[in-house]
Image 1 (spheres, rainbow, N blue to C red):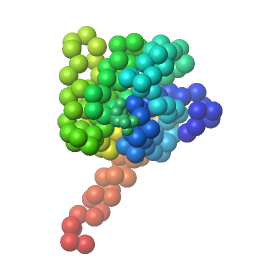
Image 2: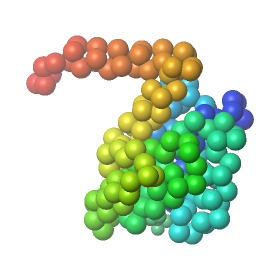
Image 3: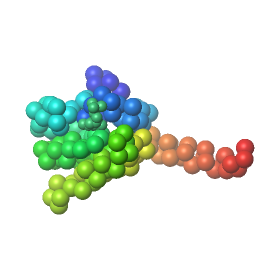
Image 4: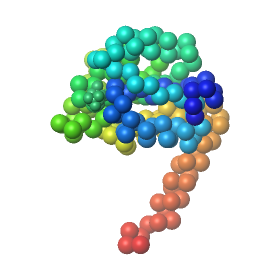
Length: 167
Ligand code: RP5
């Protein structure tokens, strides 16, 4: 869902264009569930002023969750959370040097007072962050709740209907 179709409820941000390979899984999930969202590259290290502006304007623009993906010394989710009360869902991108353990520990080990909900390293984390954001929105947006229910029902049926691993 593009920025212009509906006012975005979820912002997907990432530290670098190179994170898109991972974060596209969050975007695809939100798209499939009909959650209006936007996508931006916002770097804690390279464009810190953009990060501050993005966080400062997030609530006023109607964002209800920010999915933030970053790799390595992954400060983006924590710094966003420091500057906005909009819930931040952190996705550790799988780094080349340390396989994403650096990203995971950078994001998950927030000191008490500024929470970041941290997801799995890589594609699964990006996908689950989107599902979690949809679940957060479901109570106030029935269509999103229905789409989420339908997704889970389909997923269950696919596994249950394909339960012999030899076939
Ligand atoms: C982080 O550095 C980004 O989130 C990315 O995962 C990592 C590498 O960035 P590039 O050098 O590929 O731009 O800030």
